[in-house]
Length: 255
Image (cartoon, helix red, strand yellow):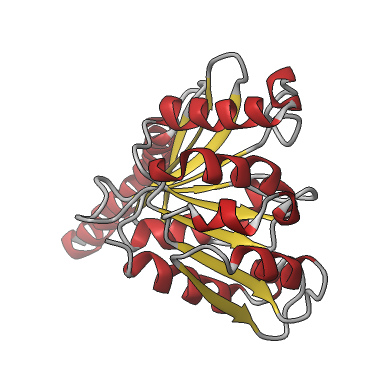
């Protein structure tokens, strides 16, 4: 009889313990979720593969929405990298492609912006002129605290990047052209005056803007060429691994 009572007591204790776990576990999980939730602010942070990603808006005459991924302080000798985008894309493209996270893991601060009138950036009158677009990129660099970044310019963004390169190329540690528009608007002599290290990158199936950009930008003294095989105009989407390999190879050789 005492043995039976002992077994009954252990059974009751087990049932009680299970019931308490049932009550307490959801509360603990809720507390963890609450502690990990950040309020919705103008700038939002989250974790991406051992790096911190955030979005925000740089204020000023032309407010600019941006996405940034970094793994703390940039590695020694590694420049910041600023990504522009093409006509059909936004800063989200570089996040979805994994480019921002990849560069962060390699020790770079990587930032992508929405150009005025695209994505989450409102239109801006100042970018209607060439001088205004140069001033706009000046504003972006100042607001984001980028001293001498590498500027990555695909397609339509050449309207912003090329005049900035020719006017203030000394403010850039490097320039990556991905078949940008507008390369024929400048002379060979204008290009020869630019000392910014440049990567001319395009897909081998981009027979229009890719080859056109090469013919013009080959006059830049410090250029190198990378052709992405079996890729079209948006070569970074067609062959992301080849694109990332070429981009990282260029960044690593910058001093």
